[in-house]
Image 1 (cartoon, rainbow, N blue to C red):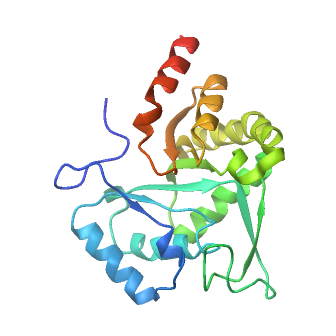
Image 2: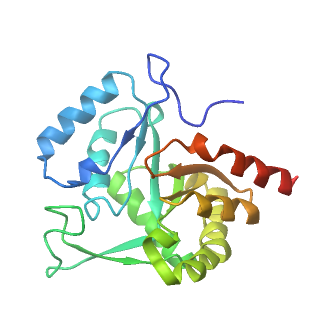
Length: 221
C-alpha cells in the first residue's frame, strides 16, 4: 500500500502546517512566505497542509503562489472544509489568533452546499484542479461547545457524503477529520470508514490514543 503522505528526502514523516503562513500570532510578508516555501520544497518536503481559516484565506493564497511554479505532482496538498469566507470591506484586520488577515468574513457551514462551495473556493485560491486530502475542520466540542452534537450529526449526514461526491468527481482524492479532540475522530469512525485521514491538533501524538482507534476498528469489522 502506498503512503498517503510522502516522506521527506531524508525519509522523515514530516510536513508543513500552513497556520503560520496565515499570519498566526504575527505577520510575515508575502516575500518571506515564498522564500520559506521554496526552501522547504527544494529541501524535499512534499506534504503541505492549509485551511480557509488560516488568515481568512491568506495561507491558501500563499500556497497557491508556490503551486504556480512547481510541479503539482511534487506536492501532497490538504485543506479543510467547515468555514466559508465572504469578501467584505468591513471585515476586521485581525481575527482570532491571526493578524493582518484577508478582508473576508468567516462563518461555519458544514452543509452539503457549504462543503461544495468551500472546496471550489479553495481550488480557486490554490490554483489547482484537485485537493489530495480534504479535512472536515473543527467539528468538535472544543469549537462548538453545546452545539457539538448537532454539528457532528450534520458532518456525518451532509459534509462527508458531499465530500464523497466530490471525490467521485475527482475534485477531492481523500477525506479526513481535523480537530483538537480525539474523541470526535473515534465518533466519526464509528459511523463511516470513508474517512481515511485523521489530524489531531492537540499537543500529543495520535499514537497516545491508538487503543481507542483499534477498539473502534474491531467494532466495525
